[in-house]
Image (cartoon, rainbow, N blue to C red; front, side, top):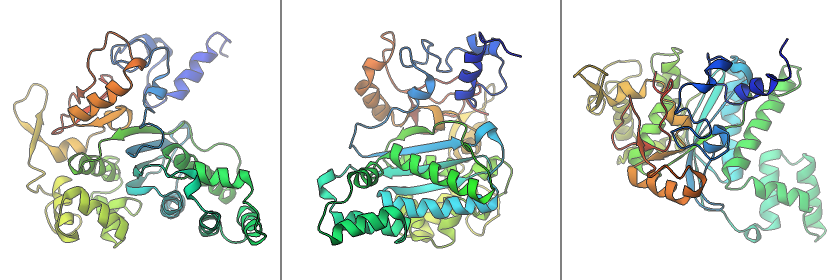
Length: 375
């Protein structure tokens, strides 16, 4: 039985479970550079590292985010039916919230999203008719909010303020988008399995990503390679709950985003370039090999002169991808750090840091993670 003295530590470990997985309470004072307040990677002064990982663009400003959230306890509770439902919900919610989904991966115990959030629209630009249309398309005509909003419009009255406010908080806003997604998955899951209570073990993590093709395609490939990294499939094209497989299946939105990321003239060219980036030969699904981009040297193994390909690095678990705060070119990370500089220890003189152990070309992050950073 734990004494009250130690209970706050247990709560703290639970809040950042993946960061400290496998470490005891006695380890909390070790491993400086993990992001604990005051440590050398430049954590927010007096703040939890989870909050550091949630810095984002200014209110109303456009941005791209790599978001991730894990099931409570890391349990593999999301079966194939649940992951399929998550994919369906994601498409509908993206249209409703005016958030562009660039790619995604639904895993048995967590999920990854790469989303582009456009510049926020002024609240007054949403007409009552538009709000009613959004409610009916997403919730259905028989849903109570839809009926109340439609009845108000028919009577020439304004839509109830609570309904209007709830819709607007979900529009072009990453926190509102993620809250709606996770809440709806939880409600579906609890109804389906006759249970109650929470499903997710943490607030979502997010990394702000530089919106350039060179950066986006690396993050997208890292996300799409999750099932390969976990040993679920040998080829991401065969994993039905990822954005790459959706693109192969003909989903236009996924093909469009990948084609733009690769700077390709059409989908066949983009598909070939993307497979090469992920370390597969051009051609059919499941053919392992190295394409031209896959052979590009990105770094070296410690103590070895042999170069490590980009595709090999992308197949590793890189914590910076979910905990790096800002991810992009050196100029981008430094600019974002300068914008939030007052939140950091005064001893820190610069923002951008290389990803040690996985130095992907042109990629820098804010946090200098050291403990279990690359595996």
